Amino acid sequence: MDEERERFFSRLATIPGLRTMPSIGAWILVEVDNPADVARKVNRRLTPGIVSVPRNVPGAVRLPVRDPKSNEELFVTIRDLLYKKARTRYFQELRQVSLAAK
Image (cartoon, rainbow, N blue to C red; front, side, top):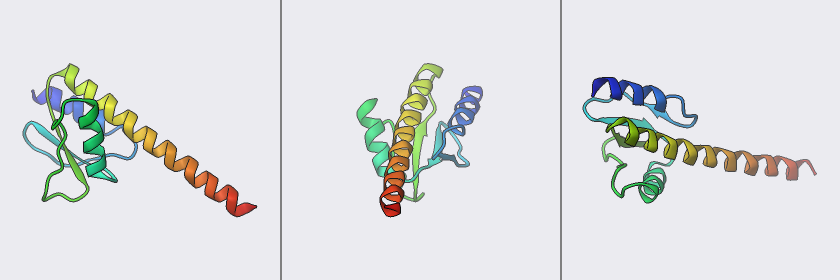
């Protein structure tokens, strides 16, 4: 389990817009911009309740460490979600700059 946890932790650290935080046990804490929104969207796409927002850690979501297949599915879901958010934000900012230049 420790090997898989380290592998999953390392994979999560490669996602732009997500910062891994020191964690213990079968959970990994990650910092994201809008934790409630991220948790809601991931839970809709995967198993409800899989991602939670801890009360005492502002700006974070808690991810379970499971088997390699489940961890990869969770990784891909979070990566795609955050990529989509970053891309949308980029194009909104680009549009604002373009309109301001006119």
